[in-house]
Length: 97
Image (cartoon, rainbow, N blue to C red; front, side, top):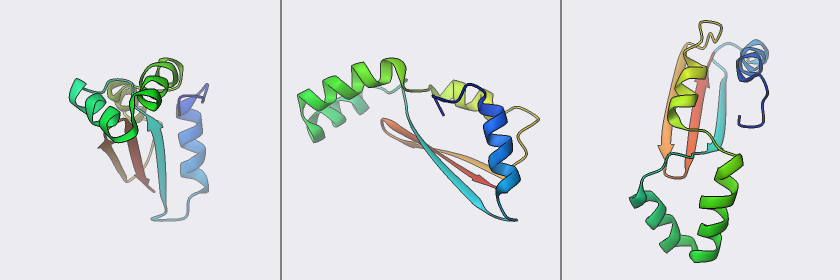
């Protein structure tokens, strides 16, 4: 989602092309993670990958939970279900038509 210039328009189009009860799963990097989540990432993947991902990638290629909530709260977005799942440094949107 972080590359979309007009996220609301993209989500409207996703909704349009989905069949009834169809689902769209969207994953994106999360910028506003806790220190604990960052430490778990470092332990799991090592200091180098943590440095690259937690600092460089997220600096320009990520969203905060607040930004996602603002996009999804638009009245133009008409999904029957909107679920945001926190997966540590990744955030998952599960949208059902």
